[in-house]
Length: 170
Image 1 (cartoon, rainbow, N blue to C red):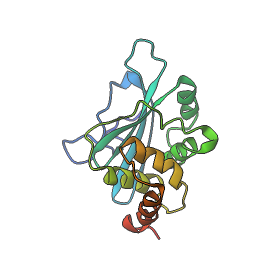
Image 2 (image 1 turned 30 degrees about the horizontal axis):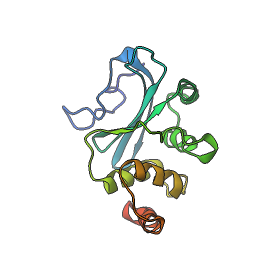
Image 3 (image 1 turned 180 degrees about the vertical axis):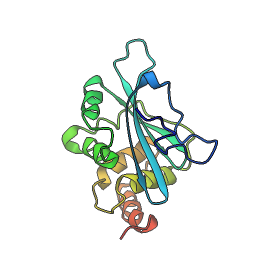
């Protein structure tokens, strides 16, 4: 298995893109590259003794965000993808209404949190990098609400529609 360094995920010299847990704790890593951006999704075994849950971590722009707590069944679902699977596809499929939006659950912790708008935009840019609309307004709104967005739906619609232009799509 490749180390994060050999997979080209080290970010700037001397700075790790994602603080990786011990190799034995990593269940699966899905990584990819977008021009000008790197991202990594890591399904990690929980530190809790029961070990029934894992955390889905999104590293973007040198920041780490825990975007959800995963049930064991969900973890097995994500692990069914090959290590070189399209991380955007993995995540977008699993924030769809059909899947129940299991990543966007109550116990979300944001580490080294930049402004909410930046995090929302970064997630959009990473997961909808082709401007395909795969990450729709509703799943992204749920993520924004977890980060503190509490304005009217009309304001969210305006912000969401501005994302493609802000991140160079369309």
